[in-house]
Image 1: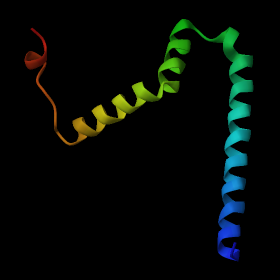
Image 2: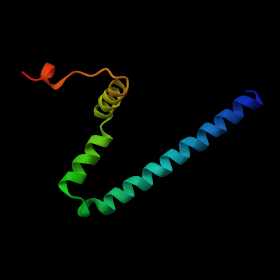
Image 3: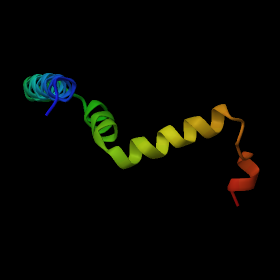
Length: 77
């Protein structure tokens, strides 16, 4: 492996390690705070952690920003 490739691997390992470290810290904080969360807070966290829901929300926001919207009358019976 050449030097540039080794540097990329090391950089990736460092980033990966930081991501895992941050995830571990986040889990620790959530465990600590869980008893203090309201049902609404828990529901919000569940939505934020659901990749499929977040993908749909991201798509909806992009569509709205692009002006690709439907009127309420066209979606409701």
